[in-house]
Length: 375
Image (cartoon, rainbow, N blue to C red; front, side, top):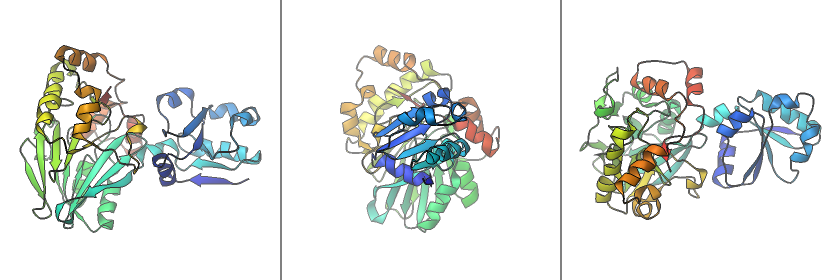
């Protein structure tokens, strides 16, 4: 029977559209338990490929014949081998092109909405990692917010829609993924903005992004208002765009709130986190559409693949916004922390410009799920 390569975009659409899929994951058990392809209608069976070197007969009763079957491994090679063995047993099988490493890097662009004066706002959904990046476009000028290290995706997308990248922003100094902001700015001549309170150890030039900044994109129809909102980091900064969208960085997510410990200062910053969420955000319009820098669970995706919800809805439904007792909030945030992201200290140093790992090392540093949230 046939063996085919499933492209990353095809898999992304299956996840977004909640299509049925059976995944045979042939990585080792620890890697599978730590991180896998998520989807509401995806079923799994995990067995390390080296247990199948003598044949796949022992797992044939585990493989459905009435569902599409995808074999997944770390880099592709092992999944091709196993897929061919299953094909020889008479099954139609696909393997994931590029494996989990490629899935970790794939970005799916989703148009969030139109802006005043004909502009658009796009969200780039990193399904395999939970990262969310943004592109604001107005009058052939673009600004990028919280770009991942796959800089060429943003540069090429802007070129395709005929926009010139004029500004690049990071809402904070990221610790779970490597920012592509500086790389994009160097490639396009754009201004790279960082919150100055997060940039004390940065070794490259940047423009200081502080509370109260008002930065024009295109003509005067779009303004990005920087809203200082410490908590995840001391410099964390939110953006209100077009008086309609709240880009919350890693302060507020759809189903959770940001963790304050990735610089080792959870006890110091938990008060800032509460003030940002319970005071600064409460002063904003509940009609603002919250667009975070990460999502934690696949259920946070909307039907179109976007991750977005009104601020008023989150005030009503997000548990992290409804803990009246300050002591209880402090305990929840500091005692309920998930495992820290892989290599997060190295990632922070990379984003400061202190170290410059090669491409393969950067991939290894980022492998794993999103761990920026507290639930």
